[in-house]
Length: 364
Image (cartoon, rainbow, N blue to C red; front, side, top):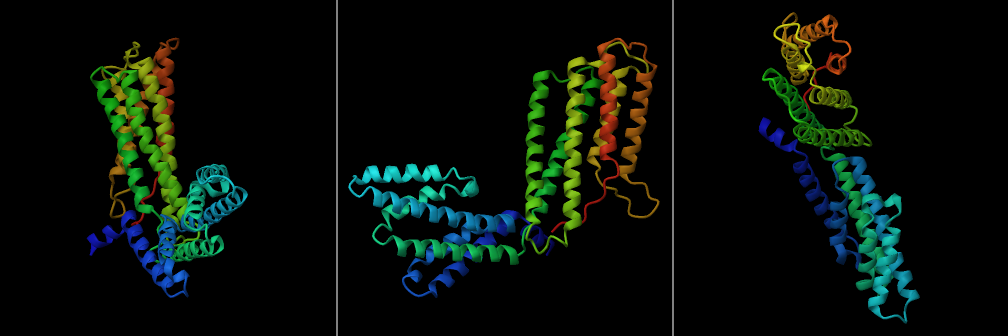
């Protein structure tokens, strides 16, 4: 039962079920219409598939924008055709496509703009004998199917895309923690990544963060016109908070890593505590990675100590040692000293950002 629920939580599975059901219902509805519309039932199925998107808001947007683009394409084809009756067909169709592409630049159409040229060519090649009838059949049935697609998306487990967002956040979190701990290991061994190596790691983390932000935006869109939005409002808000917090921490970590790679403050003669600056800085980075890896409290009973609280305490202790090292140093005119100060401030800010995150409830 649990496996089936997890399986149904997959966005592509949900979209497949919704698209299949919407296409079948649209086809059946179109078949019941009087001739000649019933002969073009496949247009209704097409409209249903077009309108089934990851969110209710996107489904509604796709429905009316696609139909608008189709009608615009039909209009372009008819007008250009009538204006060029004496012109050879190859030139006419070239003009039809050219004018349609111009209209595709209309911002209102967004990603559905390509339907203008598609519909224009279709009208010119298939519906030229009776443009009005063809336009009514095609656009009308597409609109019917799109309306059914939006209805199915709204009624049948309307998606909030929470599962995808959580996965993307977890992936970004894992990469960020891996980077912090990798940097700490390098410092303990007396090595740090070269600027080129860090750029490669940075690109990987940036890609994960981009996917996380995109998933968060999808969740925000999914809450519009969604009957389940109120039920999962708290979860969606926490996903937004976690995404934004992790994004801010990633920016701070990028800055402090750049400082460590370029200025290498651990090699500037600031050896005061526990064998040197490198070890103290490594402990601070490692402990910050531990907090990143423990975003939620895990205590099951009141008074129990959880891994997150322990990670925060360890990070605070490590940062206190790093701050003490900085304050006790007498190399204040060295650029490594200033780099170490900036790194320390950045880690304090990162820890403050990560602090007091709440557990996210079960997602559906």
